[in-house]
Amino acid sequence: MATTLRPIRHEDRLSLVEHLDELRKRIIVCLIVFVACFGLCLWQGDRVLDIVNRPLERTAFRDTKGSKDPFERTAALQAQLRKSALASAASYDDLAQAAEDPAIRRGYQQLATQARALARSVPPQEAKRPVTLGVGEPFTATVRIAGYAALLIALPFLLYQAYAFVLPAFSREERSVALPLMAMVPFLFIAGVVFAYYMVLPNAINFLQNFNDDKFDILLQAKDYYRFSITVLIAMGLCFQVPVGILALTRLGIISVGQLRQSRRYSILGIAVIAMLLPGQDPVTMLSLMIPLYVLFEGSILLAWLAERRAPRVIDDLEP
Image 1 (tube, one colour):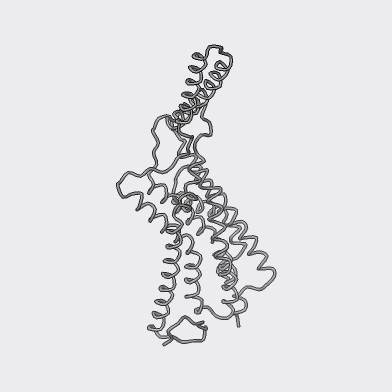
Image 2 (tube, helix red, strand yellow):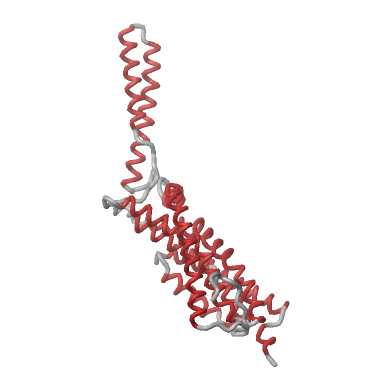
């Protein structure tokens, strides 16, 4: 029995024990990769937290003049207090320069110094950050987000190992279809994560955090925010695998391009159901998920049509 991972051909006949041994080795490799990614993310914990918190930071101070959010109104008051203190200090400096009596001049200078000290004591405007409630939650939240981020980074490799495990079950003709599709998996996953981070997540968080904000003192717990954010990123990366699934089905002859075109209404319904089951059942998040999924579906139909025109389907190659 081999002790390392080796390429397995379709013609090879492995026993159940050998299949289980290969599965065990692939699981061990996946665990090693995940642990390495986890160590990297834990080492760079501050940077990971800054990256994940960035969509939340953009939700505050967008309209402080008309905002009824107590958090933003307090920040606006502090900013106005700082501005008034600096203006007072400048006025006291002018009065001190114009005063002829040395005692009066020193009094104005002291007032100017106090006004500048007041301006420096006003805390700077800071964006929203997740809130921790428990004594050990800062530590557990940091470890948890490092684990989520490690899973996010390692998932393309984990998906590749899963496909590689089932690849020997394909024939030579089927493998000619599967290998290009496997090469698309990590790139599509990364594209989905990037799209969710820059498009879906900021819009969803902005809508949810500013909805009825004049009726609530909105405090967002760290574990809930990080779970929501990472789940959206992973879900969008997996949803971007739609082209791989559709191309595989059409190239294997399980479904035709014509059938896909005729089932558009059912596909829209299925996409709506998937978007509803994903985190954030609000309309903004659902639309942010539905639109790219439908575009991917239509793009997959176009790719399948082009592939069908350029090369015969595998089902034709298998016919006697």
